[in-house]
Image (cartoon, rainbow, N blue to C red; front, side, top):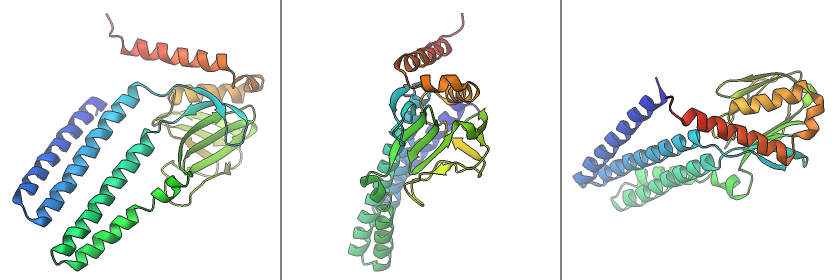
Length: 258
């Protein structure tokens, strides 16, 4: 199924949920209003996510010069902060819905429902603890003269150049290793959406990643194959050249054939 057809079907589904929500709210009963408002939240969040995803797929962030978590100068493939913002907004919306539902259930004389919704609302607040403590960041892939490092949400790892055996791009970039990478995760359970892979495999998620997986694979494969190039990656002219190539490719792909 093409991405356009999938997006159209999702948009129709969101509209259907929105209409169902309108009908339930019109009933006027507390339970119907709560369920209808939940359908509204799902439809609105789904529609916003759909728009943001389509925009990000067409305009990814630019590559940057920066500092890796290890402190080394790095060529950075940053992740868009949109994934964290969308997750936080969606979780906050559901949390508010649960707490409002608990209040309404209590006033309607349903203490069991009030307690259940209240506990669910408090549980949904848990992901905000590491977020507010600064442990969750959009991060990126950092290519340094010493190796490759990833920091994304609550996940982090680093691997030296000599430990990289294979670079395989697809929807994500898979790195085959000679030995397991060093882990630098900031959380144990939450904000761990990055695939962990096996002991000898690392996965660099391509979603929301600057440049795309092809550019990441090209840079990492060159650094692995040409040791002399590793110390020149974190330089302004290299970043400008790669960004220029990516923009030219994006323009060419967006221009219709004559």
